[in-house]
Amino acid sequence: MADKVTQVFQPSEPPVHPQGKPVSQEVQPEVVQAQDQASIAEEVAEVPKPPRKGVLKKLIFFGLFFVILLIMLAFVATKLKPASDLLFGKKGEIVWWGMQHDKGVYSSIIEEFEKENPNIKIIYEKQSPRDYRERLTNSLASGKGPDVFEIHNSWLPMFKTELATLPTSVMGKEEFDKSFYPSIVANLTTEKGIVAMPLEYDALTLFINEDIFAASLQRPPETWDELKKLVDPREEKSLTIRERDGKIIQSGIALGETSNIDHWPEILALMMFQNRVNPSNPSGQKMADVLTFYTDFRRQNVWDDTLPASTTAFAQGKLAMYFGPTARAIDIAKNNPKLRFKTVRLPQLPKNTPSDPNYSYNTFWVQSVWERSSNKEAAWILLKFLAEKGSLQEINQNIKKHETLEKVYPRPEMNISLREDDILGSIIALGLESHSWYLADNTFDGNTGINSQLKAAFGGVVNEWSARSGEKALNVLQEEVQKILIQYGVSLR
Image 1 (tube, rainbow, N blue to C red):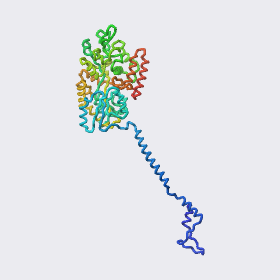
Image 2 (spheres, rainbow, N blue to C red):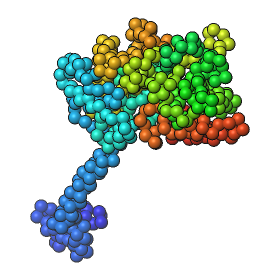
Image 3 (cartoon, one colour):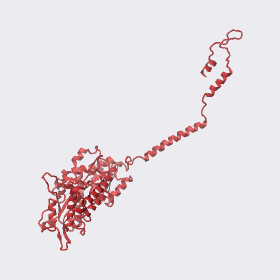
Image 4 (cartoon, one colour):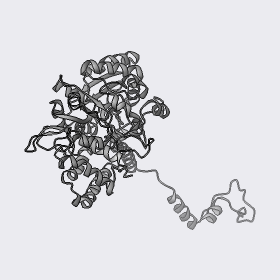
């Protein structure tokens, strides 16, 4: 095709006149053969024609469709965005759910914070203990908040995806570690960071009826062996008094049962730690020894299931010794204002050397920040403000005013003046040697909560424990406990 085009437009030699003279090229007529004309026609036919109107309409349609598709994909991507990436709540307004204390305990300190931070408003809402954990779980799952909420120190595994970590810009890890009891620091520090702020501290302790001890000329026990001897009905000066038919008139200690002993899960956990048993792996002879020792009080008829709940029995003056956290002192005093009682250090196992550690078991409430709150940083600033020494003192004064009994501070150095307190001094003495786990009573975590599930697992073994069923029962217990812990992603170590 290219050669033909050259021949048509650029002849190689000038044409010759019929008479033999060359014809001037300027006036030479353009001669095209028929065959070449056909070739030109083909070339012309190959030149693209302008697009028709129908084609333009199609291009416009597909362009619009593509744009709409991109918009729809962006919308769907937003809807499918992980819940953890979505923020909820009114900016600058912090809703705080508490369960232990009335609004009056925090009103003055909230007012001070709002004066220092005029762009932040705090709304404190006192919650009912009934189904508290389940209501909190549902509220967070539905995206309704609250921004700050109170949880038990054993609940962290149940809320791990909802807990925001403490920003180092608000409070660094080194400052946090130095500020609070070691057990608090260990408890509230997770793999992703610090997830709660303590405003108070509590632990299991031993309450004693002062009148009963004075009448019997006995002193409080320092070891478990001493305690067991004090309450043995066969002993002459036993604190356990029974009628001839065996009916218990006055019990020396509430141990051995589960149905009517408040805080038996904490008592059992304490015994496990003292006997070097890993609660996550409750097996072997040491665990069997713990169960045998605990249930001996039932077999010796020191306590039975016909008696009222242990807290009630102690308040009625029918129980010489009672285990519970110091917070129960308020209930006891309300039920019997005339009762003379105090607390003493927890009994320990005999020591091989004086340097062997003592053991305590803590149970307390903390404040956490919601991971999906639009006010996370402001919420943490609030909690740090509340955990400062001056704020804690003001809160404790308000607690004493409204509830009659102040709390142990989470900062060890602030408890120096409380060391000799008849109620709080016993847990302060063991504060640096306390431990924690997931066995806890009276936490209102619901039937599916980690406390309730573990309580049911251990309780079943305690109620049916005998030397003959030992190994088989422990195997079942171990499986049940580890199944529960795995459910919440808790390490079995």
